[in-house]
Image (tube, rainbow, N blue to C red):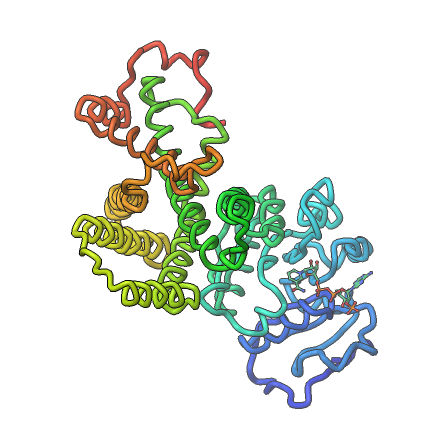
Length: 472
Ligand code: NAP
């Protein structure tokens, strides 16, 4: 290279006989350097374009060249722009050198709608002669250095020119990524929003779980601990740690499991009422249906905590103390206690249903993992999630009814005229199960099946004026 700006960091040059495609990276920041390293490892020649080619940092990967932007642009057809969007205007004076080149926009923003147009569209407007492709922005500098693993193998790209996209996809494939063409440059905004998302589908289920836990915690705190303090003067606040937690967990779990199945039931009734499936569900129902998996997984989490809290009951100091005390008093008073078969039956059934319910719960959780659900056919998936799911709800609800056993009718259960938490939590699952029972009765089921196959009760419902369009 005779160019005066040339500054080679290579200690050991690649053999000049080996011809390698040269790719250009503008910006020697975190992302630029990581990407450059990966490109070098994949066998590309890398030329960095920098504002200060001579004083660029020693962190630049060995084997690459650092030139001024204009000179660097000459050396490759593909240019990765690893510079923040705010500085893109440095490209305007380079318009001539960038004509016909493929510019890959890697940029992300700090928040949604930070700018009126997508960064990639802005870049295209600054350099109209170049072909802009958006891509790679969902990767981080860190993951680029680490190499692709299963989770971050996917990169998304979009752009107007098919050839330009193909060139970028070829590089992505060589770096070990699988590139997915998402379409035209107008999709760029969507791709730029990807990295900003923070568990979007988990938000609502997490709010519900937190709200329910807090509400039931305070309800049980008043009913169990504050009630005992006021009526008997006893301080049993230690029960907050295990007893109360072991009540809140199953209650929240059962309510959330029924919240997984309620929207499906509501949707079926809505279709029955409308007599057609060709109308959109209200937005709230749509959103609710889309977060069922997350609701279910959180419910499973609470059920798991309930199992753990239940397993440690025998090693609790309070429980051991009470058991010993009872035994001693039986011996001292020389009493004999009768074995009550009914109690044994109810206790064992209660535990057994709980175990069966929890096992199915776990099965539902496992089949909701993408790696598992991907190998199931739709029929298998819906059999597990719907049929076995409703069975799980039935078993867990029956488990809770058996827990109440004969306490439902005893007035001492209703402290301060309030029902215990587990009775409150039975309302929703019972309603869901009853509605589901109605739906699977032969005549209703027949109508629903016909509607799902495209039958409509009234022919005039096909009139677009009468219905909300299916596609917004
Ligand atoms: P960075 O560390 O701040 O580096 C940006 C580089 O841009 C600088 O090293 C500098 O290189 C160049 N630059 C700075 N000001 C400039 C100006 N006024 N004119 C021309 N060039 C200028 O940023 P980064 O983390 O590498 O991110 C670069 C881009 O990639 C951003 O758009 C970011 O959104 C995106 N991105 C980053 C990551 C990540 O993990 N870091 C992940 C995905 C996407 P020179 O000094 O050599 O000119």
